[in-house]
Image 1 (cartoon, rainbow, N blue to C red):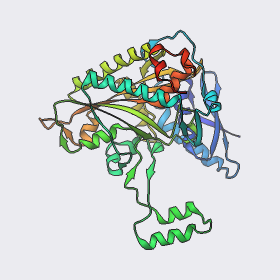
Image 2: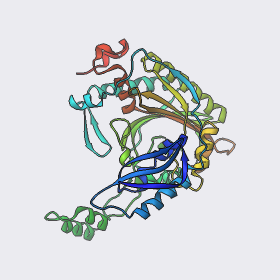
Image 3: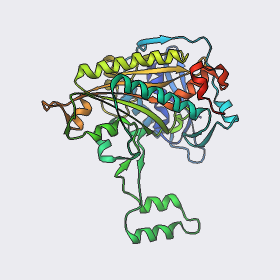
Length: 394
């Protein structure tokens, strides 16, 4: 273990902002804990991979870069809660039980396969959300490809905001000699990682970190087909979560039900408010106590990361719906976002006056939502709310 004293103590209220970034300092970090003195964090204890321990001075430098750039500029504040509901029964983490029943299995870092009852719950909850948005907003539904062009993802600003989460797709260079050389390199148990680095390099597509980017790409450089629109989709999203992956709470790939609002600002904000209210009612009907609060994104290494995080909270551009997993932990199962004209401008989506449209979106993580449901109601369908029991599959 290495103790890294902090040049400037971090206020305790910003402990979460620091903790959500430590693993991204270096792949060599395998564990950490924050060292407190009073209401300040004065050091970070880190453990590193024994096979290739990093230089302590370099590790210290990198940690201080993150703290100075991303953390210290933020203003400590208690989250503003806009909705809260309690449930009759306490939540209890059931992940170990799901593993023992082989209802889920870990297949790699941040990768978990799911079976019943998680599958049926995901589908049923998604159907409820899909019906809600189509009935309430007359939403148009699309099914998008998994991959998104790298040039489209670049237009979102994601590269500058969240480089730590990006996941790329590569392929072998398209040349017969390159294919033959690759086959020769991996023959008889050759070094596959080296061969891939040597013979690949086309990164013209990415794995999408969220589904709404497909929608902005769909309407890019054009006039919106109507004065206002609501689009919904379901698909896979991908984010590299380093060592933060845990149970069904934080996966490298996960399933999203996404809803996108495009149009004038009052339309976008009005739709977001209505969807939030309808979502609260759905959560209460399912007996899922929780809360919705003002939140912020983990902007990373951007020159204005701390300022952007603070302004996002101050302007209430993002809300998160959080449901409990046990007495100490909860998880964000949905977010409700207002982008102002950011994506309308960056993707060239305009209205009939050639003004960039306003946009907003909401995303529901279906694995997380099903997991929170099971942590609240358990794995026995007899204990589920009546409307959910018919969905149970052995």
